[in-house]
Length: 228
Image (cartoon, rainbow, N blue to C red; front, side, top):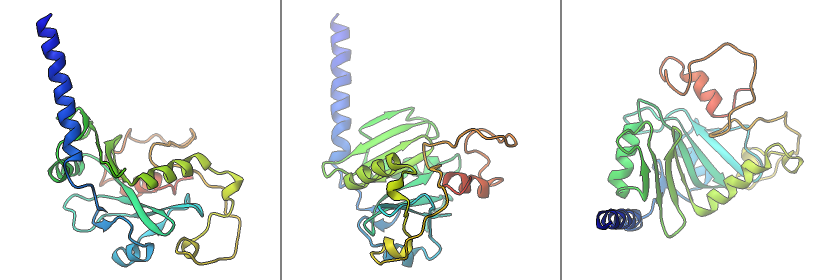
């Protein structure tokens, strides 16, 4: 009985210790080198080839890049934009960069508040939280970082789907606060992270996100919402 109590106490103390680790570090002030709160214009100046995902709407946008700069492991990423400012983003993880990003996050922010399969970066689920509402998560072959506002707005965006409310999905001009002629876009399909497309009749493909170099283009198109 005493052993069980002692073990339980160790688990509680360990959990409490982990909970303090992320909170004891400075919260993220940038996503992939781009300061949180940066304007869309600032993002474009750093990544001239950044492109607007067609699933974006007039309230919330996703801007994607094929590879982040200054990263030794190739890392496709998508920046999340709300009211013309960066509120977080996501990085696609695979066997080539999962270890890099997990190690980088632990080095920068300490051990996560919660973590499973921590000895295998390709399978791990790790979460960091800070008092200012910023959260960082590695899960499902994705690294996701969002401010509290970014998380709330992204959740609403996903819930809106293809509703009539966002029939005018805007464009890069409206994203930056300008005005543009309203036009109804073609039907959109939210195939972003965590939302697989409806089953379709097509040639079988390798499971998961493996085969990074052999199938980069099709994987990027599927992840970033271009597949129809």
